[in-house]
Image (cartoon, rainbow, N blue to C red; front, side):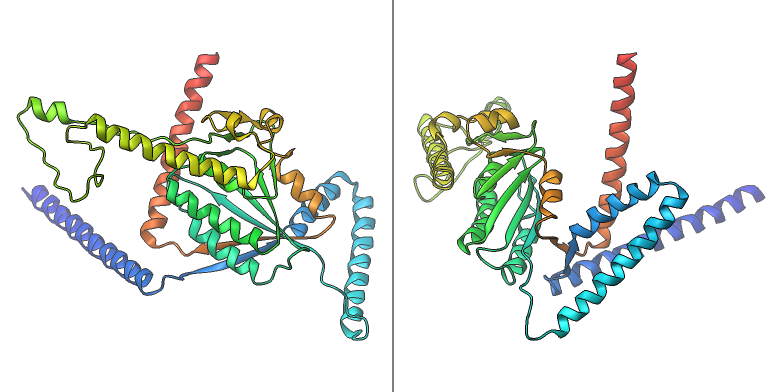
Length: 354
């Protein structure tokens, strides 16, 4: 009996603790949502000089390949060189009679697209920052682009953000390492030059729409579904109602019109492209894409940027919004689930191979 009493008290403490924890978490969630509503610009611009990044990588491996004696001599020479460069830099700053022209800069932006093109807002902010300092005819913007496409209006806005760069007379280069298809290619075609890795997926210049229809299921179970509209074409296709041939045709006409706008958009920005041959919804891998002129060069973004470091200051620019606590928890759970799924798939694959 005494055991049951102790167990009951322990259980009550546990329940009390859980309820208290839930209340605290709820308060935190409410507070973070309120802060986010009060401050839409809750984030910061992050700038990183890639010349320094690649230089450190090169020097790190150089140092590891040397003997201890060689490393000491190399470090001594490096310190002497850095000191001389620093001294020379100070001398140039004090020489008002011969001001040195600012070096060419290459600004690197990133876009990782989902179906809603959710990265558009951070991209917009980063572009606004870059355009405030970039010099037309001198500087360059590189967009590292990865997207399989998505909603037409969302990717139309994302592409329009890149159009802002070209309209300012700043050279724009698009680098595609994995995929730029459909809406992703709509963005890539804005660039003056498109560079892709050998097996990157490009193209898919087409429009698709699909939806289920439960009308027969509802009819079988004697369930009526009514749609009330004002305007002949307010609702052409529906999930629950009975679709008509007239409605389907109007929907198809809208898709064809959107496809036409898509083709015109690509043709205006890549006039040498045979749009009739590539606007079929097909995709091409890097080398094949080069043959049909969807891209201009085969090269990875790393290759392009490392080479660029020899001729300009290469600067990565991104806008990072501060994540709320629920978002951080969600990302952590998502990453853990993804890691687990990939481990299971890898194990299954290895067993099949054996």
